[in-house]
Image (tube, rainbow, N blue to C red; front, side, top):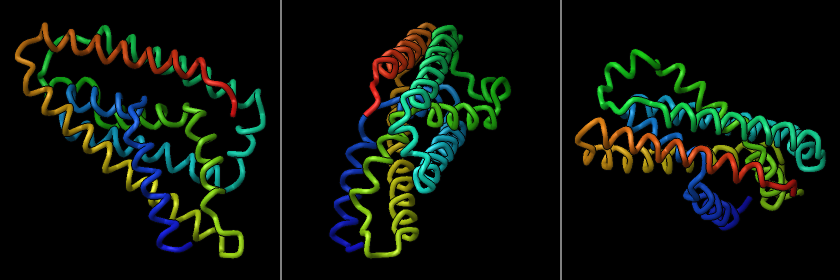
Length: 206
């Protein structure tokens, strides 16, 4: 893979990672409710889910989800149900900014697991990777190393972008002065989770 070809993929990945989705919403809501440490656990979880998708694409299972309507629909509706459930939980969250208490109620391990499932149950992610990766793989060069380079690039870019979203959320949190405002913000994020779930429900197999 040439440097120019890799740079083209890098730009493509940056643009796609910047597009707001369930991962960005999860990162921002976690950063505002649990601080940077909670956001770090959430980002790690998102990247774990993304890495699993990359491995699945590498071994060929991405093609299955691209061509099997049943597999796509099962994963899609699991993702819809999970995002709606997260939205309801966020909507009902108390309006508080006591990060220490929140951390005790929901340890970072739980935030990590939640983020893993947010990415794992998104069929559009694995289908997209299955469609994108082959466009940048040189057939006459060792493919395993090319998949590794593309996969690492994807994860690193997403980490940087999610850190940016977490930082933005922390800046917003600095303007929140009381529990009433925080409760309203929780409802905004809850609504966004459910909106993304609704958008995912309307997704069609590529």
